[in-house]
Amino acid sequence: MHNRWTLVTTWFLLSATGQAVAGGGPPSSDTTLLEDGEKIYQQYCASCHGIEGEGMPNWERQNAQGELPAPPHGPEGHTWKHSDAMLYRIVSEGWRDPWNKTERLTMPAFKEILTPAETRDVVNYLKTLWTPEQRRHQAEESEGAPFPAQSE
Image (cartoon, rainbow, N blue to C red; front, side, top):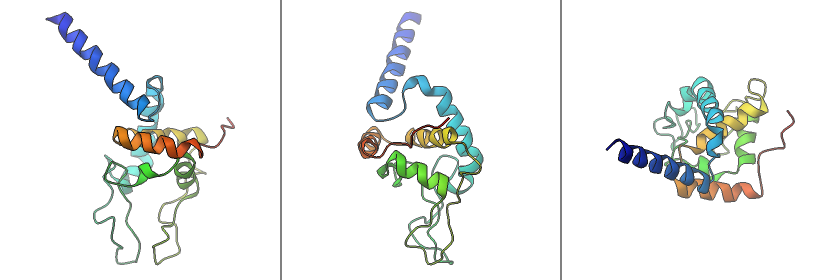
């Protein structure tokens, strides 16, 4: 019985790892980086985008200030539609949704707070929130627009 449990557990872990890699997620050897990315997400992003990436309520409708609330990063959102380069830029430089009626950045810039590696880690963590199909789509988007070259 113990050997069967070990076999089932091993099969499950290998299947999950294979799906993550085939789906455009970070390689399984990057688990520490994913953990780092999750910690960064919880510290800097969860207050707006939700502890589990669920976004703010009514994120698709402008609020009283005429701004769109923070979107979810899970499968129901649109983060997965953007390339690594675009997601990196949004985290680094901030973002003002073009539909917003105000001119301010509703997504603050983190380039003075996060290192380039930390920015990549948090973006790679977001990929764990997506379906395999979404990860594949995002990986294809990133082929022509990867993360900026590492300078550290």
